[in-house]
Length: 462
Image 1 (cartoon, rainbow, N blue to C red):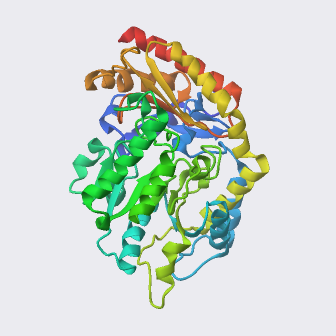
Image 2: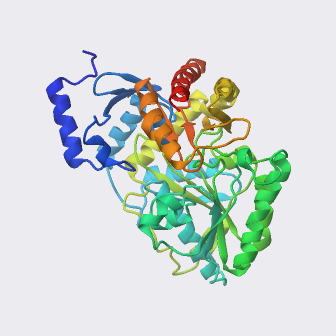
Image 3: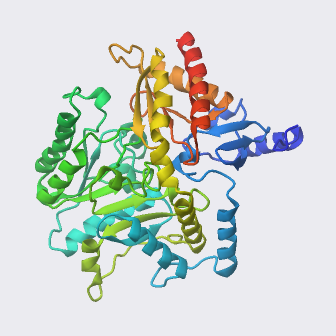
């Protein structure tokens, strides 16, 4: 029996307890009434191990989180040390050293004058904070009607009511409606399925950005507060920005006095080879939302980083941003984040991603010889592989076919073959890969080989 494996009695008890009591997130709970619940018990580097002792390559970094990989005792020790000194204290009119140090550190990494760090418990809370700040800021500066938000089609921005309202995925929203009103969608940057200028990335980028100006004009510039955009859009399968896209978006936001929020809950902290994706693509946001990789998942933490301009009205006597979270800036999480960032610098994590991202792309692009693989896209260590029925016409799968392909076969088959990743159909069917940032060519090859084997088998089942 592998050293990580539970004996049969303990395994059975754990399975039954999970079925009886644990409500898993975004999970079809009924599917586990007749099948085993996957239980992960340990991680080491780029690998995770289940309760049977089987090893899997973590091709999704947990959930775009585990930048430094698993089993980093230095991060665990930082948490233990801080917990023994000050386990908890809120940031409600008080501070603690680690929150101050981390805020300064993050402000130093952030582009331009993004110097004000508001800590949250995670990404959805960071997005919620950014929208509330945008509305509050304009009310304090004489433009009280500016409250609407623009985001992109198929984009995911979180699960809280405000963040879900900004999300551009109708299937995720319908069961929770009515949501917060006043959010509007514009086209995303999926050039593989561009409705216009599909053969000209620059023209397509200009067109896609200009649709934001059209939306602002349609709603009335005096009513629009912010635009929320990810550097690389996650949902739909990793859409990088075309050349010139963010430059044009920045011009539009300046023209209409609309705040540009860079939602970097996934893209920050090395995922694209920089501390922030805005740096990679050369644009200046008014706010950044972030979480996930800030601590490499060793403790929960998120943040909204705002420009000095947005802080100014709140520095007036008696002014207050009446918003906060009990666990925002938690001392243990802040201590872990500081150590995480120390390791980033000491080990040159961003440099490693930039040095090896070309090899990662080239390895995944080998899969383009398979009939199912229509497109491989992304940047850094963040890629989507779009699956198609017909490569020549780019014909996609209908809902029933997608269900049968992704949930009926690929998700389980990839995991059984030793690769943890995401098979997703929020948009057209894709496989997403976002491995720990410590990976190298051996891991890239392992991913490609498993994907090739499983996708070849999937083709035979269609």
